[in-house]
Amino acid sequence: MFAIVRSVVLWLSVLACLALLIAQVGAYLEFSMVPAPTASTTGPQNTADLVFGLMSIGGGILGFLFTAAAGVVGLIVAATERRNSWIVAICLSGALVVAALAVSAFILLGLPRNPYYAFTVLLFVPLTTLAFYLRLRQAGLHPAVGSPTPS
Image 1: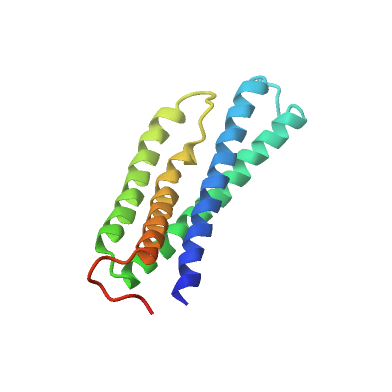
Image 2: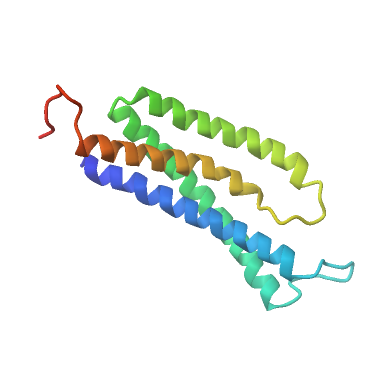
């Protein structure tokens, strides 16, 4: 049972990272390849604008959902395994994300156009849960000296 939940942490973390990176790439490509909108622009200017916008929005929504799920499942696994330092690390990465979102709201939203996707800061949480999974896997393969072998 725990092996399945551990692998869920891995997959949620990887999917969150991929979705957020897709959102960032979409935002950057939209900034660099699509001309700025004018007063008469009422929608996507061309196919590239539509595709890059959908990459940003879709990747951002999926990244947000996968990040939240990775954080929650990571906290559950850390609490079940009694890894208090990882509980603190995951909570701190979540707090850092909230603070970074607040700061980026003031900086990025004041600009008319920017190449950065605001939700990219969410990467702190899945990267922390991914590190937690890798540490659990490393600890599972090489038990500490003097500890009983896992059965």
